[in-house]
Image (cartoon, rainbow, N blue to C red; front, side, top):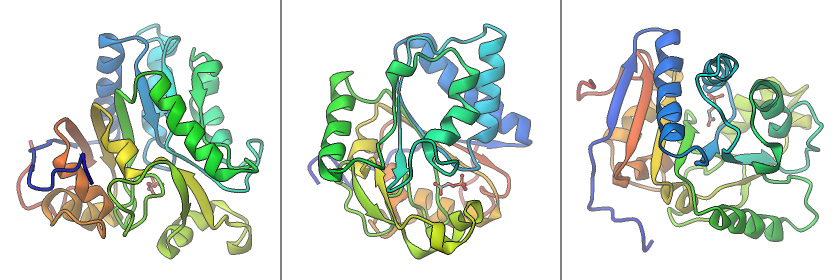
Length: 257
Ligand code: PGA
């Protein structure tokens, strides 16, 4: 764990949004600011329910010429193993529907792990190489699982993990099965950026909304730094911004600003 200094706790910037509109506005501001600093920034992008309003807000700003993604490089956090990019449950399809088709991003600068790669280990290594080739992640935007996972880094994943094939935790399969026709259709594995990959981002934006995330938020921000709570490692990151709604923040003991 060369790059994880567990003794170093850094106070994150924690913002509690008072409304869904404020949530997406504050999160979009973080990204817009990053692009303002460097138009060819390298972002890690999440999927799931949490970022939907953020993507809608970014698309609105792009259509009003308030921000451009034309030079942006993006790397999605993860993709299901065994789902074709065309499959409606793939994260390729999610990203096309909710973000890429709505903004001016250059699709040749878009990367998502290939869940259909015949050689998954080679695909993971390729993904790491591609991130390195554009200078590493400037900003990793991540959602939080109810079990405090980031990407598909489930509890127990080593903090120094790189992009790898992960087995979904049963609680993750339960949570995500609502998107699939049934448990049988649900992939059991995913290719995910590792925790070490995410931690090397120069800035991290963590987002969580809803009461089901409240305990994961508390454990991640105020609990012990342990692989059993994957996002707890973010306490060691020097540039962490956290955007929460009231429910997700409700178990924090230290009052956020
Ligand atoms: P959600 O998922 O945004 O759909 O709640 C977040 C996650 O599991 O990482």
